[in-house]
Image (cartoon, rainbow, N blue to C red):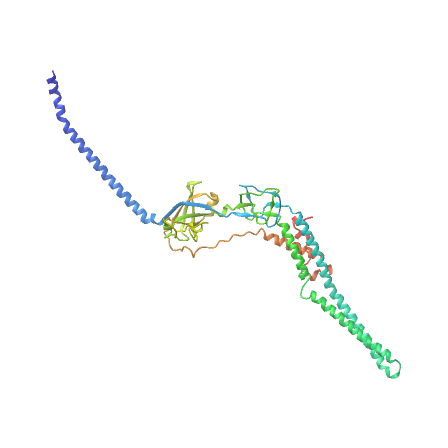
Length: 423
């Protein structure tokens, strides 16, 4: 029974080597085909990358060590005082010129009123000097008339002196009267000259005494106006530290105002990446806050004058001890497109991915940088309002008979009235 079983299974074992050899040939063919396809894929990928690198890739410099930067406009008082109102808080937006912080202005108001009263009094005193010019001119005319009458009296007496009609004593008195009239005339002329020395080549409004009093009014007005702190720019309030009732001193930071419509990006590139980087080259950026779906476009506008390590409080001293080379990074400023900023605002400190296209190397690294100017005109209004107030005071205190020659004609109170000083 067992022999029969062995004879029946023998044919099956006899055909197995042929099937195994055929499977091995198929596996080797598949492996060879896969290796061939892999080699072709790697070759194509290498060729594609090489083509990309030599046409595009080698002209791109990227970094994720980049952050949004902007101006932090400090709101600081120009005079000391006690805070009585704070009209904005963190995260809120304020417009340029809006009153943000108000100080107690009682003392400044009193000082301003005293300065205005002094100016009015000075104007009236100087106006008297111009009136005295006419008075001294009339006095000279009177003295000249007295001198002419004395001379006529002397001539009449001298004409009849030979006839014995007048005595020698009368002639002597007549001569004394002439000399007295001449002295009085000379005194009147000297008084007129002294008064003209105080009034010539100037007007009431431009008189030095009036200008000195006006400067005190201007100074007092500015102190009073500066009790209200306006927003220098339009932006968002940040880092508010001022509180109602706090006593503040000039220069103390009360809060910061951040204008987000003019932010830029500071990208820190390795020193080896700067070889072909130039001012004016185009830049593509993405922000982590919006993701890769939102792209910003800008251009390189400047390079820092030194690396970050060079401006440290304690810069590295490589001349001492062991030295290990550390690749330095240089801040590169990138200006953003304002329309894209309006559509997707950025905040200071946000992370950015920056890609610079260095294909165009026609620009320079330093000489082409454009200077940027930041300014505010909110404080210039104080000076204009102070000048208007001074003109109004001068006009109100000049006599009507001299208003045409003052150099500071009367102004309408409604036109130059300052709301802060009303009442």
